[in-house]
Length: 198
Figure 1 (cartoon, helix red, strand yellow):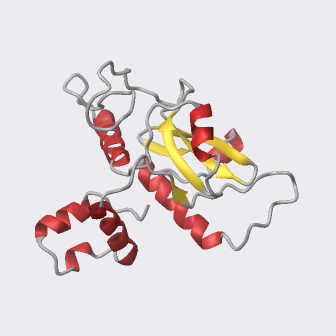
Figure 2 (cartoon, rainbow, N blue to C red):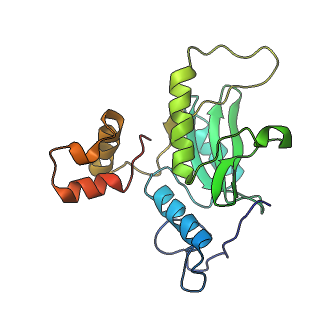
């Protein structure tokens, strides 16, 4: 079963800009809700989570973007929380993100699902595929069978990221040993909050 468990929020308020409110509230202190809340908080820190957005709005945002540019938005399908909208060689396309048993993975046909990697957070999922695309992309050669390569290379930010966040991303790209750096503990704590490269 694919989970889209949170109730719509009427206040559209604080934290992440999702229409799903805050997971893990006092009404639902389950470990599952706490994991989901942490994943959504992390997603809210990225700057490339757009919240509630239609397919056409995403298409418009990505229309002039280079291939590989992507954003994350709330899914318009009732069985899914989130969708990746990405610019491909054939134009903008959408791929749902499945959340099941506390893990996120890309939606796919049944025979492939068991082979797809699963992640504790959406940001970890995106970071993995961005790094994989950097490692594997050698050129713009299109497949001959009519399919389209899906590359995730550059996030489309909702606004310019803060200098602090950009510095954090750069440090994450250079080292995984944050606690070995000659920095104050407060800065190390800030770096620990977001350990990703994208």
